[in-house]
Amino acid sequence: MTVAHPVSRPPRGWNSWDSYGTTVTEAEVLANAHFLAEHLAPFGWDTVVIDIDWSDPSARSHGYNTAAPLVMDEHGRLLPDPGRFPSAADGAGFAPLAQEIHALGLRLGIHVMRGIPRRAVAANSPLLGSDLLAADIADPTNSCEWNPHMVGIDHTVPGAHAYYDSVLALYAGWGVDFLKVDDMLWPYQAAEIEAFAGAIERSGRPMQLSLSPGRDLSLTRLPHLREHATMWRICDDLWDRWEDIEANFARFARWAPHAGPDGWPDGDMLPLGRIGLRAERGEPRDDLLTPEERRTLMTLWVIARSPLMVGGDLPSSDPTTIALLQNPEVLAVHADSSGGREVFREDPLILWTAAGPDGAHYVAAFNVGDEELAVSLDSQGVGLPAALEGEVIELWSGESVPARPVAEQSDAARGVASGSSAIDVVIPRHGAVLLRHVG
Image (cartoon, rainbow, N blue to C red; front, side):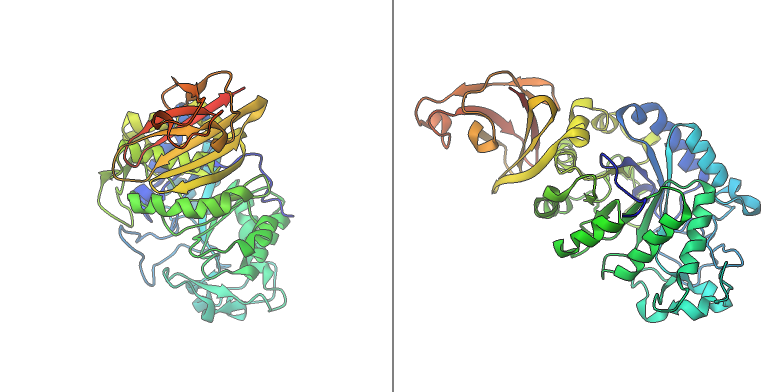
């Protein structure tokens, strides 16, 4: 077991990718950090993640630059571009920014790619704490297919771990708390994962380890992932499209029963609010999801206990979107529930259940169809008692939902067994309700 985990609840925070792609600046990170601290930290959002290419002075929207002049020290370790991160000047790295974020009561996360920079290999940089040179450990046959900056590491070379050890020592010195490490899961990079997790442990600083990108990830990897990581993606990049959200229903149905302190399956960032300012995909926009689709996204991620990393630029996002992230009753499901799982799927209706503390029971009902859905849920069909005592509350609205005993089958409660209670809900197109019963 590494110091990367366990953590008692899924991580929550903000990530720069959906808004700024490769181009985020220190001022923008701090603006979002201050907003997070003031408006979302009281609700458990505590991590600020700087996504990819923070070392590239030539970073741009909509892609990566081949042969980018990445800022690098003499040992082949990437450093923040001081043009975009002025506090990183004179070799200070992210330490000053980490100090400011920690002073807000928040945690600092950064994105990194697996491997070693091509620039370090071309310069044959000497590895810190080793007689090896960068070219000695480089494995150009195992390079990222979508990012041109790095090549893999040949971990069969004795002492190759020195490079990751030096990199993680640097991050530990800066005060980094969270690492999103990319190009680890497609294809599955077991040796890289083990080497990176081992370097975190040897750094002496606890850091949560998040693995990406998650395309075609199999449950056969679960024991290895739990041994080495805090969280891992179960899908490719998710954007503000209904089809992206709907595709994750099946993935979460596989993965959510395995979520817990030993590791958190991750459905990717929440593309909510003002996104695309200088991003990889799309132009500046308020996300293209409907209000119902936003609620479905949040409800599914919460009951599946996926990490929650919102991607919108927080200061310029609509207050109604921010309010979605501030519902304490909904977020309690994310923090404290257990056993979340899909119990029924017959399109357009999908049902999930989970247990909560003090006898609470949660039910999420989703309508993935294109028309409004009125349905009577069988209380026993969602794991509730036949005779319901106590209120059923819809957590998004805070309103009580009527539940009525069914003495015999009738058209008024079609599908509800005799002796059960009928819970009547109306779910908008692409919408969701999240119910809590304590009895």
